[in-house]
Image (cartoon, rainbow, N blue to C red; front, side):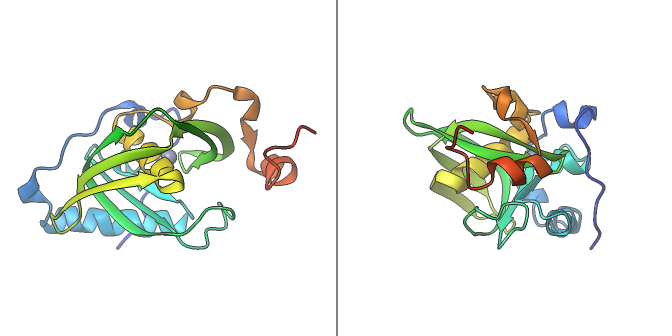
Length: 182
Ligand SMILES: [Zn+2]
């Protein structure tokens, strides 16, 4: 396994749509190695998720995991999830605001509105179909990661840029304090 280099905001690969992975290619050593490397890279940098665009590969693959993440101390745990060719459909019209960061936009946070509930259809790394309803934080991470696969970043979804903050200032002024005015 290897820790991969993560593309940062401004790199054109982050703005390109990723291509679907042919189903027959999911089991290949190349795809499985890419998935292993993405998981290792996500864990090395304490990401809550990582999309293939972020490691300079335009394939529709993303990985998600939250397990006592120091970058997201308030986030609930999410077991390791590998999504291939994910399709996300919003359920209902309810939106939720929440903080997001991104390994491609280091040391920043912003408040992002997301659909509160989505249907997720995808393949897992064994080629099995996934078809689930996701809510709240898991729904947020899915929307963030699948946006990457379409060339979008969380800043594209922000509506209030007064919440865009460096991580040190977020820890100082915003952590656990999002509803407060001062
Ligand atoms: Zn990201």
